[in-house]
Length: 136
Length: 379
Image (cartoon, rainbow over the protein chains, first blue to last red):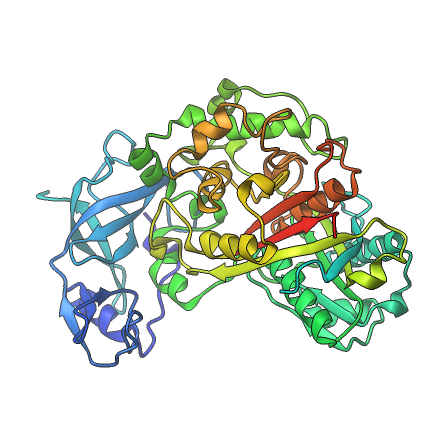
């Protein structure tokens, strides 16, 4: 993977804590104090209740493989075929990622397989949250 | 929504579809617009409302020399035209304007005079999806499908049957891009694009356009064409990010837009004689049949594979050949509406005999938005 060519995130005031967290090896989510709901992507209020009494929590990093595709199309910074996955975090929210340290094949990528977060430092500003097979 | 109070009195696609290297995108809009105005027996000067999606509505009005009293530029992807029909009907009923022109043009294949992308970039998508290698629609729209296949036992063979049966409809349509019959093996042996999606499970990429003219129903009866009435409508949206779709086996936008369309039309499923479900990819008719309530959850694939939607079946679906075989410029919703109008006028190449009610469903973005229009030829 040629990291330099990938489209990288530009953090905003609402998402800065998330990207600061990944740099420190932490997967941060937000939780509504009134409803207990954990949500993603980040914003300054709970999208279910509208409540602004929220806190930032650190996720366990455990997830399961919810769905994916294996793209054979060209993409900057990627060598096809590569999997684009959506994982379901233990806390509830879903998140897009790549599955690392795993063959990019239907045989190796089994739905609902347990995964754990793996942080990929791209440059000084951006570390991407990726997922790998649990226990690897 | 006042049932049957507004009618489509002009409808046309561009003179040519497919590869049109002689026209830029704005001219595709205009070509369709002039065709639709002629179809209605009206003049450009009769138009006092202009609406378009995926292109600056001001540019379309100016290009056509129209200074409108009403303007709508709702752009939520391929279903924008369903939403624009709904908004135009409301505007006409409110007296904001009398005669609305809705245009679509897209140089999807030749890429002439096209600005920006029809896939609307969002802040969240840029931060939380693009870094992981999503690019064009085949890398996004397809992501929920393995989840559906596991939860409901949908096989790749059944998914392939959607493409096979739509080709049966396309074979009856002289303007369809692909008309030669295909079978399940052809689909499953076609080039892998984005596992589990092969080339023949993905829509075409073409140039083209279409336009509609709407006015009050009581005025429509004095015009040239058999009026096609707007009987019911619905619209909704869910998320700009495929990863944040709440349920990977069902679209909230489809459900809300669909139930509102049925309710406002005052019809039940058995009243629908003809159905269009926006098919950018082979799974969409399966999700659509289920989310609109024509079949139970998990039954959409078998319903299609069993032949219910093929020519001669109980529920004629995507009778122009759909985005998979007819044409797909990028924002296909206009072509689905055109086929609904043709069926209600009784002039479709694969005409459903005696059809009185047509439901036309649209999707925008990657399950992001939806619009739904119920058309009828009976007031």
